[in-house]
Amino acid sequence: MGKKVTVVGAGFYGSTTAQRLAEYDVFDTVVITDIVEGKPAGLALDLNQSRPVEGFETTVVGVTTGPNGEGYEAIAGSDVVVVTAGLPRKPGMSRMDLLETNAKIVRQVAENVARHAPDAVVIVVSNPLDEMTALAQLATGFPKNRVLGQAGMLDSARFTNFVAEALAVPVRSVKTLTLGSHGDTMVPVPSRSTVDGRPLREAMPAEQIEELVVKTRNGGAEVVALLKTGSAYYAPSAAAARMARAVAEDSGEVMPVCAWVDGEYGISGVYLGVEAEIGAGGVRRIIETDLDPDELASLKSAAEAVRTKQSDITDM
Image 1 (cartoon, rainbow, N blue to C red):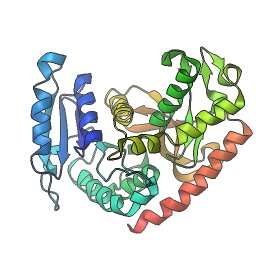
Image 2: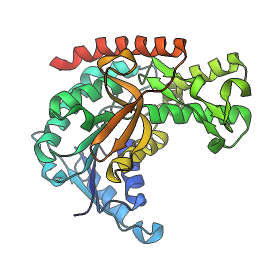
Image 3: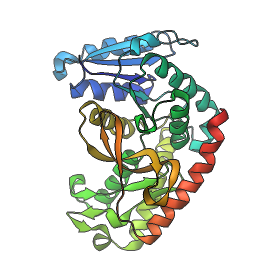
């Protein structure tokens, strides 16, 4: 049987993710759902008509869902479900400002995923990311390895791009890493970052690295402020689609994601941004990497900050 992926939410983020997944041509079917009547069907029609131009065979199906779970039967048999549903940020809003509103949406989506696609791996991208990932796991009741969040892939991509721009080098020659939360307690990891194989700290002064770390932490807010309506979706959708592909292909690729941490780095019982090996069952294992003492301390601080907020979502 062919691979099937569902993207919940047909806003800019969801529709761009669906486009990327279809153009990979590794799935038989991409399902896109939304509560706006007709919108997902219209997007699916448009995407399917791009197939002869782009040369992919994946079929895109668009389904309108209702408040009582109507339409969700279309996601049955999905190997992966990407949850983009929820409100985007507006200028001046933090990710945490979205907590209560998006918690209701994500809980409802997660319950319908559990009902209709009980074997799926769930990739959460709704904000605030760490909290919504924890909530999706609680609401689905899925094993923790099958629910993960997209954060570190995006944050590392932003960090890499900023370093490449600052040094005027190709992005492919730069490797960076961010861990921790998707937000204020993000932990960029300069000790694991390189330019053409050389440590980043040899390529630029410490003050400049710190400037780029701050810029990375505020990367999403900068896009929101410029757009004025809506938030980033090109880079986030690229990151989410890559994660979904790694699951579908059982690739074992190591990626920075929001995953359940249970003893690694001396941290337990929390969803947190770490490097993980991704395969058909979601997270195969967490990859512990050598961190500087300061970086490890920051990661532990991030874990405690996120733990406090994640404990608040159990009743939402």
